[in-house]
Length: 78
Image (cartoon, rainbow, N blue to C red; front, top):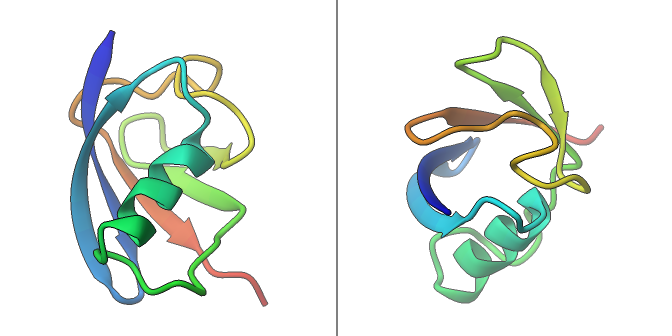
């Protein structure tokens, strides 16, 4: 099933429609390839707006309970 989510980083935000069985990191890769995110942006974790919890970029949207309309805010790597 495809979902539409918003990914927010320090560089702005972008909407993406993606298969919920893909890893969250794949969504980042798509945004980088389309020029919506700079090449060096690779956050490992996000905060889900709907779930109000930390989610991993290495897990699928299903595994992290990310649903259509969610907003994922990048937790910047330090």
